Length: 51
Image 1 (cartoon, helix red, strand yellow):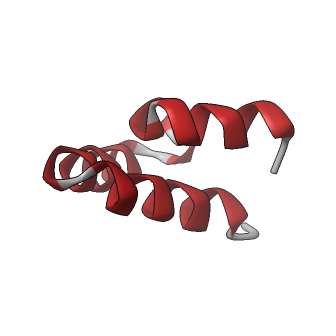
Image 2 (image 1 turned 135 degrees about the horizontal axis):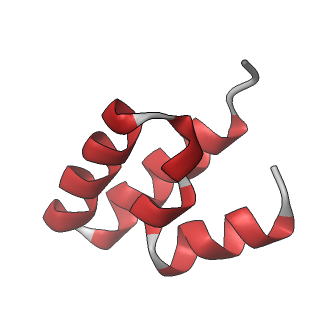
């Protein structure tokens, strides 16, 4: 997880998970629409997962 991805996850969460697949982008986008904090948390969790 790079510094720039974390910063992007805080500013605009859906854009930070763009390399993780369409499902991740959709989930983070929906959570961000429901509230900024759930979107940021989901983006950080997805970015922290090891594949």
